[in-house]
Image (cartoon, rainbow, N blue to C red; front, side):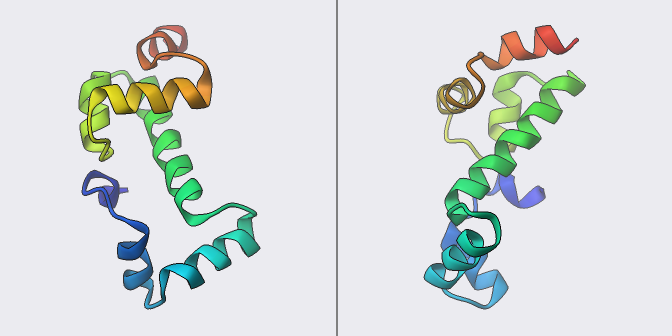
Length: 94
């Protein structure tokens, strides 16, 4: 998960795996039924949920650690996926 902080691109991940972006995307669709970028967003969201439940960091810190461009971008993505603001989610998970 440390890679998330650096905001890897699909091209970065493909290169690390020794393949091209189209091949990685095809493999992800074949194996999981989703594009590589969608899976990457899913992993970030899952980690954000874990971090919010742990409660040790603010949503702004979580956004930075997971490679979101801003707290606002993180909040928009989180709301789109869960229907709740990160702060509300954390408060309800406590």
